[in-house]
Length: 165
Image (cartoon, rainbow, N blue to C red; front, side, top):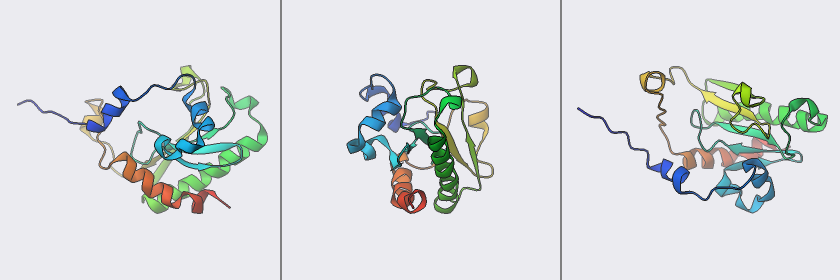
C-alpha cells in the first residue's frame, strides 16, 4: 500500500514570488509587509520573525537590521538587544505555546550549516517531549500539527507584551 502525504501549504514555497538579494534585508526594508512576512516584533537594532520553513511549529528568529555575516563585528548594542529579545522569546514560547524546552543558537557561516550565511540570525526552536518520530528520523520528513499562520497569529497577539518594554 502506498502512503501519500499532503502538504498544500508548501505550494507557496514553489509559487511565491522570489525575493532578490537578502531575504532578511528585504524584511527590514518592508515594515508594511510585517504580517505577510511573519514579523512578530521590531526593535531599534533588530527584529523577530517567524521561520517560514520551521523545524517545529513556533520556530522564530531574532535578526539584526544590519546586513552582517559575522558575529565578531556586530555592534555591542545590537548584540545586547538580540540577547534580550532571545531571553524574552524563550518566555513567550514557554508561556504561549507551552514549550517544554527551547533550542537557541546561531549557525555562523555556511560551513556551520547556516542556510542564509550572509546575514547572521539567532534561532529559537520550541520543543516538547517526544516531538520527533520515525518519519523525521527515517523519512527525513517533517509533519506539523498546526498551521503556520495560526501559530503566527497566536504569538503576534502577545509579542508586544513580551518583547516590548
